Length: 139
Image 1: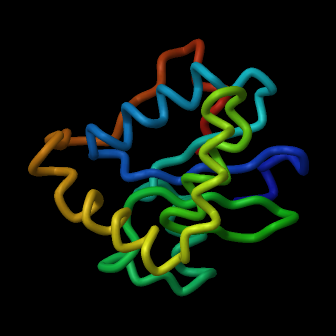
Image 2: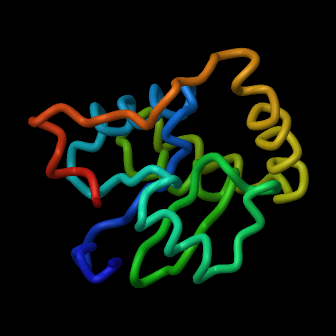
């Protein structure tokens, strides 16, 4: 499953029915000038494989995860900041938020994640990438 992820790529797993998550993924695709990231919904086979492999409690972590063969798994605010780090200036400046203790960053992250459906809505099914974007998605 994850063998399909090239060594130099990082996989962003996201909630495929969340409008905020889908918008965030489209934003990352637009600003990923080095073509570093691939994507898969948490609901996909790849997403389920990582959830099971890392024993993730989806009631506590269910929005965006970042996986790479080299660095393993990052979750919540750490995943979001590591993604932003690779999106060029000025987005890469968000790494300054790593000085904030993880429990504080994750409290803010969890608050947004908990309310994301109410604030942004959700879809009935996972996003289907356009033919132009299909190569960026892991099945």
